[in-house]
Length: 419
Image 1 (cartoon, one colour):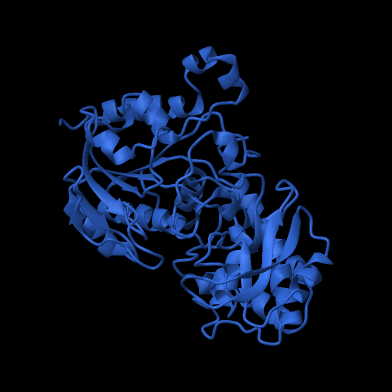
Image 2 (tube, rainbow, N blue to C red):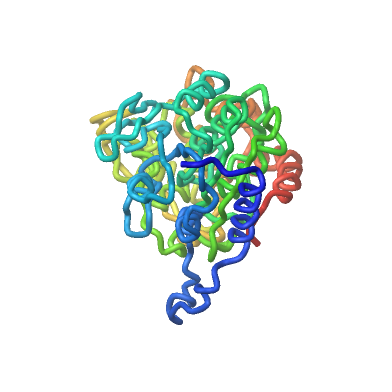
């Protein structure tokens, strides 16, 4: 396919930017029941509806996983590959892989996709120049990103986004982000902010634990605040999404972004209860309710009673017993709690997660942090761990990060694309 002139490319980009800011007029002609539901259109849906004009003349590679689907659950790689209007030449797979065959901490490696014949390159745990070299070797002009996020700083796909943006910059490639909803709303940011000395793949840069942003918004923030220099960036926005919307308002099918994120309910609690990965308690992996079930051998009804007395908004705690089929306590029956969110608008997942840590340590003498202090990587500093060890209550711990959270919220406000 021919390369566009600089003038033609600028015109296409300008048209796409206007498209992303203004829903098509056809949306106003939808039936009343669809208009009442504010039918959401993803970034990909809007890109395709515009005939892929933003990608015209480009050799395109896409970073995606099983969540990159259309409303009728076709994978966008299959859709784009079959469409002559776009020249898709490569796929880049993150953690768990492009087709989703790998468990946590794994990927699919380099292979040719049997369905399309496209080369699939592995990006997991790759960054900087080595990842830039992969983009160069693939022969793409533009790297597209389309992955469903879960709304938490330590959910690794946003750092795949970050690493791929930096690598595209190093390789001299253009970057396009196709937006999808934050499943737990974009109302506000919550939780501690990462301290840079604790940067890992579960948090590269100082953002809040529950960031309250979409991937397109994060891409704009990364590009201006954190990358060594900006990458040429375009974002294709959603239409029909409000910051107060939970995932079920989207009308989109939910595909687990990773094996232990089976439902939007999981995402709702994840930014708080994932902290239990930093302890010797089970975070519910190996059950049908990961991150909603928490427990360990030796815990009984006293934990649910203790945390229930705190009167945390929007949530109840039930005494629960379960036997994980893998991960911590595999095959053993453990006691603990199940989290039942009854008012998700009032629920604060990070505060709840801290309260659960504080009360677990109080009622169970066997409580311990992971020996590698993984909790510090998850929370972004030593503050949470050391305060809890010193006997601080949940409200004291939450109060300690409010200054840095307020600073992040001010920075975040400059990059919000939806009101």
